[in-house]
Length: 170
Image (cartoon, rainbow, N blue to C red):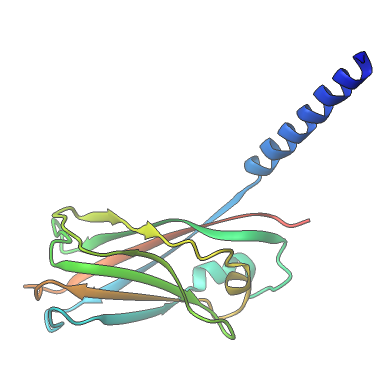
């Protein structure tokens, strides 16, 4: 009986320590881009801006054999880069999609019915499952779709910041 209890305690310790080690070696890598919202953009119409995520590609180089797995979006945020003191009150909605060569586009974050006068906003994350195939493929593309409540009085630069998390593959 004593051996069973000791074995169970040892097995529990090993399982807990494996989870702890995995969380310690979890990878996080950022992606940022700026989206220009010009004064000519009409209200109540979805507008799209696409950028190739070259800084994410430097992490993996389009390497489908990269030793990572379980890639997910962990954080998505939009903020006003310029003009100084600008806010997001003109925005009605924002959606962020990711794709790459040979993969379908996936909605990873969004926010509808925006009612903030703040200069930054955390987006709601969509449960898209794992993004391994997209991130490991070449030509990772991020598409930002936004809709305004009313036209802006001056051009705005909006910074889109995504953070991806992954764990090492065996």
